Amino acid sequence: MTTTPPDGNVIELLHGRATLALHLLREGWGRPLLLLHGLGEHSPTSVPDHLAAWTGPIYALDFVGHGASSVPRGGGYTAEVLMGDVDAAITHLGQVTVHGRGLGAYVGLLIAGGRPTLVRGVILADGPGLVGGGIRPGSPQLGIIGEPSTETPDPFALLELSRDVRPPDYAAEFVRQAMQWCPLDTPIAVCTVVRPEWLQAVVAEPGVVDTTIAEALALYDPAPS
Amino acid sequence: MSAQVDLEPPDIASTVRSFPGARRPDRSRWVSSAGLQLATYEWGDPDARVILMAHGGFDFAGTFDGFAPLLADAGYRVVSWDARGHGSSEHPVLYSWGGDLRDAVAVLDSSSVEPVIVLGHSKGGGVVLDLAHAAPHRLTHLVNLDGLPSRGNWPDLTDHERTKMLHGELEGWLDHRRLRDAQRKPGTIEELARRRAKTNVRLPIEWLEYLVPIGAAESEDGWRWKIDPTLRPGGFGPWRPEWSMQRLPGIGVPFLGVLGLELEMMSWGTRPEDVIPNLPPGAEFVPAEGVGHFVHIEQPRRIADLVLDFLDRRDGRPR
Image (cartoon, rainbow over all chains, first blue to last red; front, side, top):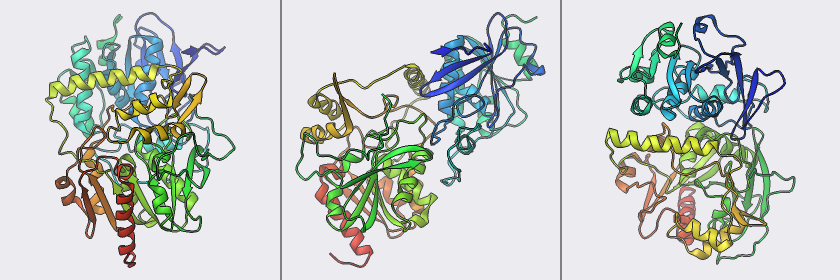
């Protein structure tokens, strides 16, 4: 379910009880490029120069608790629920290519495995939240969060998504999902300098290309200039 | 259905059903966990020593109606709450293990500034293991009732089988999240009880019928379980069962673990040999014959006596 506010550039999506902001950064024809921001970030207000070569439309999604999306009470963030956020965007947009920064790179990997016929290539880039919480849980902690607020980024998001556990074999399983059901030969492009353990496992899988962002855009662009 | 948080305290009135030994709580109140409203209940003397009790997944505090009064009548103040999205508590936007842990601490904060006895069943047992690590200064004793997941008894799968299974789980999970205005299926008290009996196979149908007017809400077309319809059993994620078990050796307060030896659908599949090497020094462990996952519901008197005896002995009060 979607609604379009008067300015036309922000589309409100519903994911469960959350309201998400999907920003149209540039109109165009063909398969959209969907940008996913890093932990604590929000969507850019214009197309970043290094992504401008994409020939189709470009959208950017604010994850729950970030940017112009709603802030839930009491936290409860997981990377998996952010995958559901992206699925809400895909429900609206149809087939997409995904570019994710940091946390958005990890979530991009998840949705590439979760909706392998709808995600036609995911580009994983450096950014905040790329490392996550390591390959196994650390000591449990309660965190110190002040009074409930509707400001973004939600402090619970910063707390929980920086401790999000990412076992390498779990991450690799999402590559296998994409490889099994996505029609592309190389549905995942890793363009990061930083390679935490989950990402090392991803790069080692068949179907993953280790490349630059410019080359990855050209690889997935259905109508390259 | 979205949980409506009334200004009135959560309902603890007797219902149209009864069950031998079961008693509704003596008091109820709302507890805010960072703004999320949790229905909280108490049995026993309000000035007595607190036992904080966490229920399992897809249960609610009313499932302690048979067990909690036995502890309250022995001189304790039992405090429990409906987990977020469960029972009468608010249906949140998000769920996580960390969220459940913070909710437990919010209820604890609202109940006592002194360290308390903590007890958890099933998933609640896993959450309180984390509580014992996150805030060890808030506990005096820890009791775990069939809440010790282990790795050993999970089925081995080939990579191909795992990939295929995850594909279905991922698609099902994402499709479920796309549903709008999902509601639990309505029915009569008897129908809801029979539905619950599919996952609570060892519990008397009369007990399950007793639970319906507590854990379900009645509307024009029948009763519906109040649990958030966006929740679904099973699923996927990075969590490994052995991670909970790895909390066990580090527990620093007197510990009692009870494991139901009759395996059933809701059991973790854990065997005594999975638990024993992980017990902390001085821990007490009872592999309980003839009882399944819901040890405190099947045999409330037996399990209450185990807990009371454990507490008395550890406090130097022979019973």
